[in-house]
Length: 209
Image (cartoon, rainbow, N blue to C red; front, side):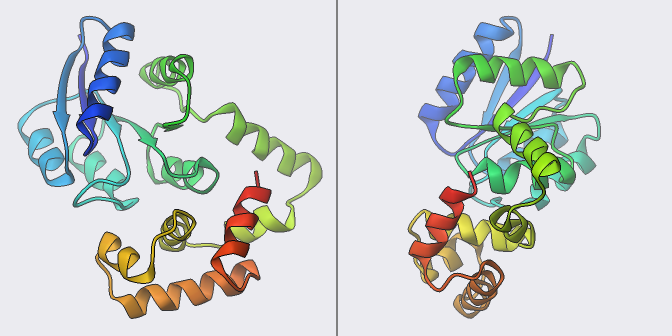
């Protein structure tokens, strides 16, 4: 019997995720958390096998969450379940120690495949991300893809928020950093990707698909 932790700050998402997991693993025990502080406290007090983790949660929203969870429970299986662009985030989170990355746009079938893959001690990436990696090997890195790989994890977080339409001040509040720091990162992002505004940035992300 698996003990599973669902981490998301939206109750409707937690409910849907719980329903999906129960349809796959009917005898599993499921606990829910809505912020990262709760996650840490829960993991320290209870033993879990599997966590479904959103990235953008209060107190979290950082790739550093993965190492923290693994320090508390090294055997914990972590599936990142996020609306963030998997082209930017999937591989960095896998490299950080996550066992899988699944987009919230994925189908119920893909959700089931991801869960079963991770439970069977394998890493999960969508066919989209894997195909992109194969295309890079066969055709060489495109300018767009190569440029995106130059970005740090923090810069990738800011790119996602910019593409989502967030202002500099909103990004600063979300990531709990100074506005000046956001502006500095933004300037470096534009320089690395050879764009001059957010519209060009959004088009670049679309074209890298």
